Length: 330
Image (cartoon, rainbow, N blue to C red; front, side, top):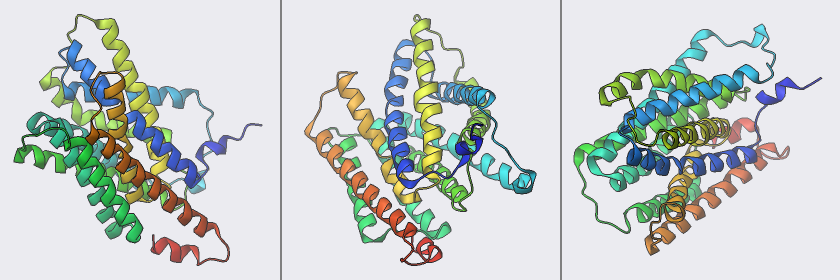
């Protein structure tokens, strides 16, 4: 008899870290795919974001329809408010994150919009994790975050002089706030040690998030006029499958068992992945700033991964402090 509960069993911390790294690498390819969409069609960023979430919803529903159904005893079923409030808030936060980011890029450019969004994200997440989740990073964690932010700044800004526009910077901070809220809510949902159905969570997040994007995308233009419909369909399918459905399932699974501030830094793998794709597939040149930024980011990820693994080992050691004390000191 198959074990249907395995899909909902608590995820080991090491596997959660790996899932987050794969998700970050997959997200890094979304920008290149989006650039190709914009080159061969008249579809705008809001339309692409809407189709991305719509396609992700369809894939998640398809997976839910064909996977084995795990048992859901009525005695442990959460109250409707406990289910719906996090889903709605997470969906709105994700829609805010994506929409404000595209607005920032359109206003102040890709370099400034990206560095402000991904640079402010760890700061907001670390602050939120401390205020709402009681997590503490320690001196090593703070040093790793500082190194990651420095690496991101070198990676994005090292080779060019960008024009900074206050409206675009403000939109980037709003985008970072939406990303931080999504990360913190995911971590909060996994704090109780309860099993999380990440596929169902992702399906609801995509579906609910597509609702506020629909009127915005309609105003921008939903019809993807193109002279290469087959190529456009293939790229849109890739965006829906790899950096959306696959990446977000892995992200939600990993973020539920890893400290929020650690999640924020690990996800900085995304711009590293984007840089690799730009060099290998789009023909962009590899600069000294790109190499230096990549090394700093990866060093920060390795450092925080080691710290997270040590913390998880300490929590499992019977002779160590009590789990409650360790949780309070995270």
